[in-house]
Image 1 (cartoon, helix red, strand yellow):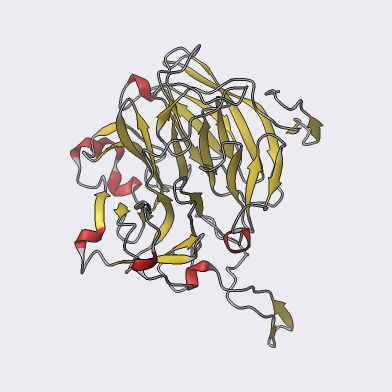
Image 2 (cartoon, rainbow, N blue to C red):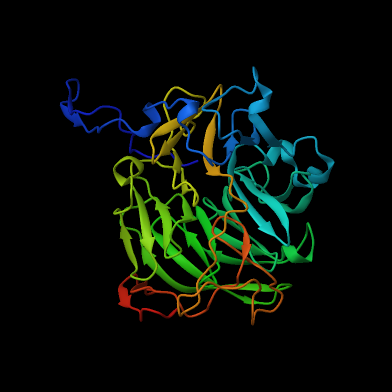
Length: 403
């Protein structure tokens, strides 16, 4: 986990730092400070999937309960995963590689639901829900943070991408060939932190420390290849979380060390004009995402006084404001559990796509932003107005086409 000099806002005034003669900036309290009774939780609120590093588990928790105390009330845990002691994952050395689970997201493919998860000491796997059966897995430099997996994505053809931050890489594994020991392609990306498959544009978005990259997937399912379609610089450094805005297929969530943006694909702009931005956009956001049905947003930000500087026990809720609280937790990322809430990608004429992927060898179903299987999307609908040349200078790119 990367520490940063930016601190979470705590007060609504500027206070004098007498000892050093400096000013410490602070803002109004975030939604994490505003509890909401369970009776006021919006109807249809989904459950919450999160990584709890304190217990070294991925937990699916009851979204209808604001206080989660698994020790006193085990019923709040809908499902849990740890590979430690599980023979199906023994070759991944989970005693050494499963140290700080750093990502958990839900995807569906061919009618099955999967939890995608990685841990910073090397573990990476796609786990079938609820059986825990292994679809695929690997250990990247197990027992070390040489690669430090931070995100993972399932592609339409069944292959799996993994981002390693300290390793500065994105790997695309031929997971469609089997659960282990498969070939992979590598794209170098400094401080790689986030991954998101885009069904509409048929690119793999990857977030690095200072840029957002769209990667073309080439080769075959058995021998995949990755190359850069285009890249844009982040408005502020230390890119961290990346995800599809569930309520708008033209936008991506992008968090940096100091703010939360939405990237508009059709214009190439990073904006903070979205609902609730005043409370959502803040420093050190480790995870952010919206529920397409209720419009609620959840996010996580570290809080002081816990076992690690990047942990929190609070999952903030926005629109309306509220919070979840995990007793004795060490939460890193949290996601809405939305495997079946689908917004189909659009054709170029604006009509909804149909199931199936045309013209793509080995791909039977695309993965929608919230993980549900859906239409394959349309190539050539990317709207990006700036790309990054090899020398780092911006150049114009034609809107409506992938350069």
